[in-house]
Image 1: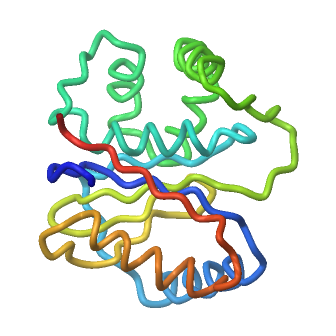
Image 2 (image 1 turned 60 degrees about the vertical axis):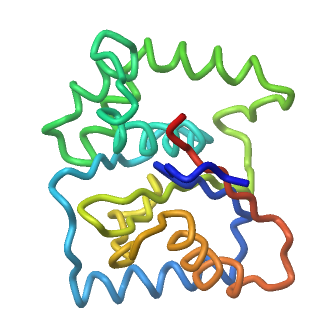
Length: 187
């Protein structure tokens, strides 16, 4: 059971050729048609290898920092303040130089049960994040050119994200069982 106040959903999935092809076609369609993006959305590009989990965490926390009461003096609070007016590209580059964020990420990774891959390791799994901003569901993937607006949430973030995950990921690779969803919830 997932508590009712869901703030973000993180998806871990295997990067299959079917999903890559679907996402490339989706990007071309959005580039041709355009999309509405919230000016309040925190989104940054990923420039550090195998940092997709960290990027997904930053997207989750950054888009909910006020609700979560993130201190502006904490490493993540300082970083979010630094990138507030930056482009996604410049925000991603700021993360490359954010040594206190690197330290916090490395300390967190060392506390887990699974060894984190080296930045240069070739992995086929990827973390992305889904958040609600201004009533719309956004897919945030630091490896993509831009966030994706999937339209109105319609009440429940987890249900809306699950529908998108099913259609855009699971149905694209129906033989795979390598999908994991985690929710950031308000306690």
